[in-house]
Image 1: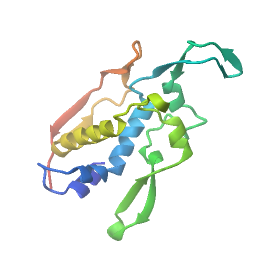
Image 2: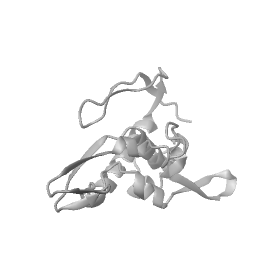
Image 3: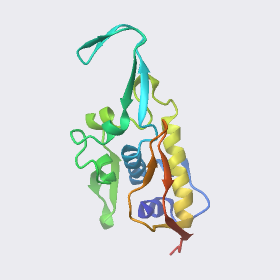
Length: 181
């Protein structure tokens, strides 16, 4: 991801453009993979606005359902090796460019549209999801252009699942100024 950031944004560490951020395909894939494994909202709720048949049962108007996004995002039938951190699952190699540089583009498969709901789903999905992704990539770029982050402890993340939001309770890292070449 740092190689991609450096190759697209170059040596100018003060400015970058919207179009440069838009070319950070691998960076976006890493963000999506993190959101897949650790959904910010592990559960979302929906209320039926009319009588409907769901799962072979008839449900009345006003019935509330909880959708377990954490389970959907980590289900072995929808995701190959769901416990493995693999951002490449959101990319495909379009072509080899000169000097073995790789250009990545997002997969437009049915699988991604059906099973990655990091910003909600359906008509009630987040209307600002594209803006949120731009903001996430911008924050990653600003931080990783200036600092190296070294994971101190390889243990599993300590996630608090007690609320409707997932909260990382502890992540031990070392942060140091980046040595630019």
